[in-house]
Image 1 (tube, one colour):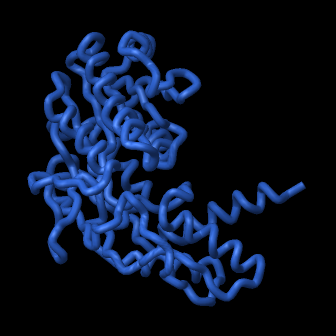
Image 2 (cartoon, helix red, strand yellow):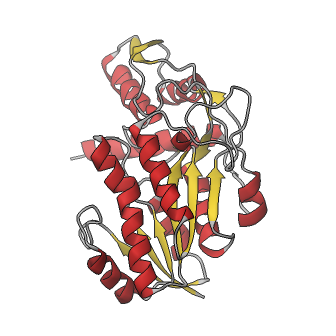
Image 3 (cartoon, rainbow, N blue to C red):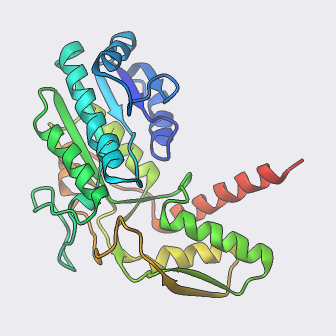
Length: 299
């Protein structure tokens, strides 16, 4: 039986983690601390340690981080926060367990046709990837039991506009509403490993209770062209016009044409494997976005 502190429990991944934990009989108490309770970007170690004492947690799940911003902010959000948590846990619960979210961007460019394994070289090509690799490096040297989950391309309900599918959904909705016959996006030919956000949440919960310290890939284990889920999304939205690939690529992924996870370690040591197909991820993502839009437009 375990007391857990969840950070970022209202975010894209965190809210699904929270739902699973609230239904898990192994959890004796669950403390969900948002930015209003503790601003991790500006908090000191003493404040983090006080939250740990108040929660009584022996397991900390960190679903916080940033996707965009200048290099110094990315480093503070994706690595500095990890350092604060490790230091505070060393003071309050040195036998505790920390799980944080990393990124496939840590690998950088990988050979087409291959699945990246956790022991493969990590050579990020963006500040975003560098910041997450720094966070993973801290985990590897932590005095507490710490795990870093390298999440590939999460999709599904709650996706944000910072994600390619979130941007596509907004474009398709606007095009259908206004009768546009074309939308403009960046290149969609890159191969990516898309994994449902609820499968990612299940991996976080699995890591809370199982597996030795270290790095674990969390993906579907398959690479598909970005064009595939974008076209699936267009179908869900009822958009039948042209998708023009004319805009600039995201800075997080520019230059990376292939990304696929080797998930054998997570299967073996965490007892986790992805369950939700891409078609269901896209469909349920669209249904939630449409529901939110309808609710916002209601009197």
